Amino acid sequence: MFRRTFWFSTGVAAGVWATTKVNRKLRQLTPESLAARAADKAVEAGHRLKEFALDVKAGMAQREEELNGALGLQSQDPHDRELPAPRRPEAPGPSRPYNRNEDH
Image (cartoon, rainbow, N blue to C red; front, side, top):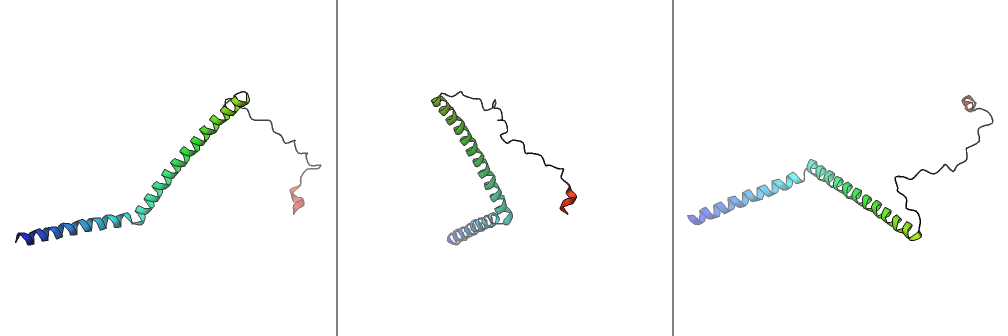
């Protein structure tokens, strides 16, 4: 009698465990769950990309300082830099005013 009770209980426990596992896996494979996981991974990838870009920018600034020091150039603070003057000469104006109605 105890043998049958043991095996019956073992079967019930295995059935509950398997049902729970299957239901959990089915919930993970729903479209909403897949979309949420994809969105989380995209946000995580965006954060890693931003960190990489900041590391590259810091490395560029450090290397620029090293090169300026090696070449004996004056070190410039990136915030104090002024924009260069425009290089393009002014375009000559039309010899006569533009009339939009001539195009039609």
